[in-house]
Image (cartoon, one colour):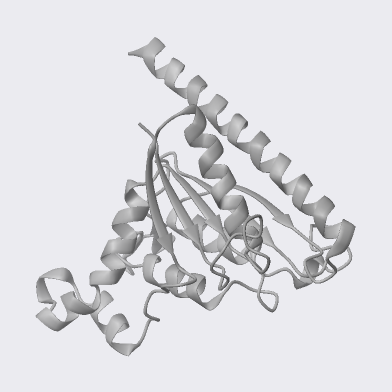
Length: 234
């Protein structure tokens, strides 16, 4: 059984297909999960990073995270409880479906706090200054996880090679953080024209929804091929 982890980072509480001022990214993550589970009733984990963001990393968190486990005091273990829970969810997941709107050219603060809590030495990446060559290495590499990054943008032209691609710091930063942990299979798409509204936004939403449907079908087909190969070689 595949486990889906749905993450919603929008500050807007509702979905734009249900509420007049709802979130486009919540709309897309819900569509992805609903379409997936229409075909396969896989396990679903859910976390709302927009309405209930993780606590930001602070000095105590850093002190605790970089203290070797046998030497951690009770207050350190307590400070890392939320981070441990977020990482445990990530480790349980096979497909991470993240709704991440663009806020001022980057990710929302709740999603940044999430990244800061899960990119953690000894849990999702390794570090050894005595190691020959690269002292850092990913701990989640080669485990078959896929990140589906579903975004929304107020303007348009943020895709590679387009008019303001250099101002898009969402996909690149998320890919970098997850890749650092070893999750390099990333599929992404986004709605544009949110600030324009009208026909352009409606068309962009329609295109994004169709792309979500195609992506679900593609990932399910890939999963079936992988399972068939395992059964053939078993």
